[in-house]
Structure formats: C-alpha cells, structure tokens
Length: 139
Image 1 (cartoon, rainbow, N blue to C red):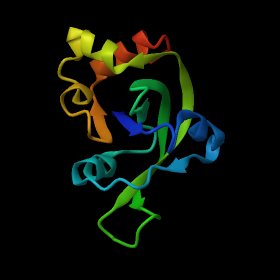
Image 2 (cartoon, one colour; image 1 turned 30 degrees about the horizontal axis):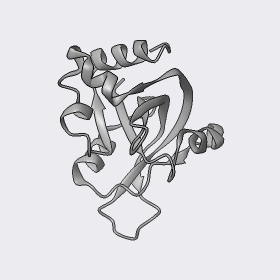
Image 3 (cartoon, helix red, strand yellow; image 1 turned 30 degrees about the vertical axis):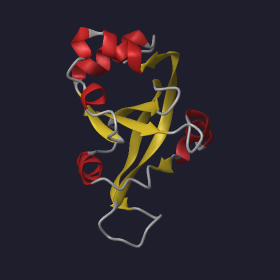
C-alpha cells in the first residue's frame, strides 16, 4: 500500500463535502499539473491519503482511500488529464497544521514542506505514522 496527500481549498471542496459523498466517493478532478497527474497514475485501489485543507486552514483533517484507479477526468475533454476516485475513511481527532508539520524535524523532507503547491503528492510510511499520531487517529 502507498500513501498520498490530496490538497483542496475547503471553500471549493472540503472534508465535509467528501464525507457527504459516502461510500460512492468522488473524482479527484481538476488537477492540471503533470507531476500530480503522474502520482495519480501510480495509485492503486486501497491506497490511503491525507485530506489536506489548503489556503487559510493549512491542515490535514482526515484520511481518504483510493476507490478507483486513474481514469479520464470528467471535467475536461483533454485526454492528458486523469484522476482517481477517493472515499472518506475517517476524520482526524485533531487537525494537524502545516506549522506543526514544519516544526517536526522528522518531517523536514515531506513533500508538503518542500513543495507545498503540489496538489497531489506522495507520503512515506514514516511520515504517515507521524502525522496520524499527531492527529490522534490510527494509521
């Protein structure tokens, strides 16, 4: 299993929106960055990811699961763009802020710290365990 981070502006698509989709989940559409798209192409059903609220909140708020592998993005006719479908798994007991992540020296190499603009990014096993612990949720 691999781990990922999905970033979204909460006023555009937030954790509550994801939760409301239930077991059906939702496409992680609208990604127009080649590196982020390529990461989605690597994803497998069952992979887990952090759901991250960007902009003002800047925090990991929950865990999602990949429920459909890369397929054409329904929001464009351009065949270059693909997306995966994700489903909410559980919220964090306590959101983990970007400042908290940056303050943890063991997370200094996390993509979120080094390239905070990337909307879809990989997370290592160690990063996964640490952030889950910080958010008081089971990994």
